[in-house]
Image 1: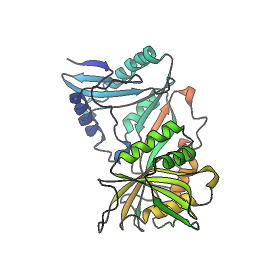
Image 2: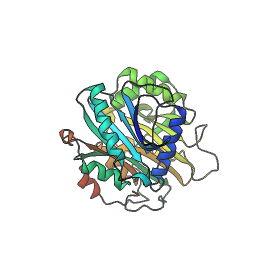
Image 3: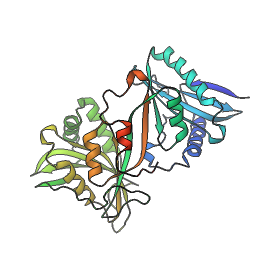
Image 4: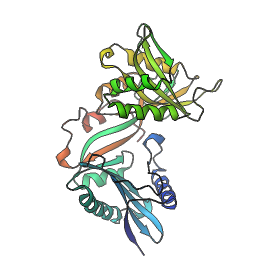
Length: 329
């Protein structure tokens, strides 16, 4: 019998079912894993998150997650199996999730995440009066001089800017990396330390200080596809993810970020792919990556209730879609 449930914990079996459902929903829209489904650990309850599922017999056919880290904005994401869409299942989950959110967090505003490549989720947001806020984008570039297949618009051979005396140096100095991270990203010391601890514990990630004439001006982290970290000798076509690039405020606008990216590519074998995630709200970074030949391969759009329309956004949806690029969406 069809039924819906609200849950604050997910068993391993249910997580496996949700992952299978997610795979079926995203199969027509291939994209980088960085914009994939993120689920909590099995059996772990979180005070700021809950989940809604719609079952046909014992199989979930629609799923919605609700995450409210600040007690003010609930971030919603979810999907319905293609063969069960347009039956009102997801709308029911949305209705029940709003009730549960009010019970847990009080009067909150909702922000909905959806892959722009899926027209059904975009239509769902627009039909309920949600307004476009911004996008989180995966951008990629293959080096040297070749471009990802199926893309167009960006200049594949765009040169990286040069800045005199810029180099990268390996570092596992926890205190130094945390200090640089806090200054570069304007983060509290405790958060920066936790972030650096996570990076240092990952066998697939390497950290580099960005030096200008031997002085640290920033840092970056590279996560390689497959551990241990580092480029594979003699292997072409390796993929690395830029999981953090920060320049200290007093050294910005001097070309250090672009020069550091060029240096990062020099660490990789020929024809390697470098991918990164950036928000359209971060206009300076977004336009820098675009200028350097990075192309959008997938994007996650955020829609909000009218009260949170993008008064702080610097790139509107129309401006974004008018950019001279071809999206794999």
